Length: 109
Image (cartoon, rainbow, N blue to C red):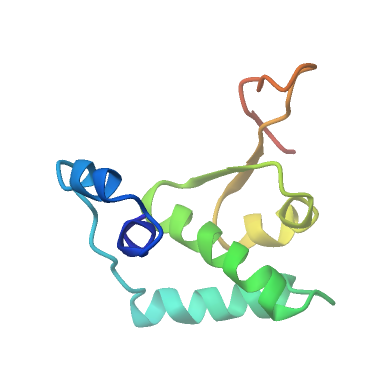
């Protein structure tokens, strides 16, 4: 979000309003977390191009580090749920109801 606010196309009034909010500081992965992340990518990437799957897997890694759950409707990630689960955490699927409203998330088993 901070990068979006620094973008020259972001209206000045939005940038001023954002100064009232707290922003988190990006924290890198520890050496152990980085190794585990690289192992995850190697194990579940499959035939996907790295540019397409690596960022998504990094979000999963961050979720494991900070919360333990990852809720998604991304079919590419859900197709890899067993491999991800063996490394980190449960992936949850948040389906949509007719009309676009979301259900309560349910665990994928």
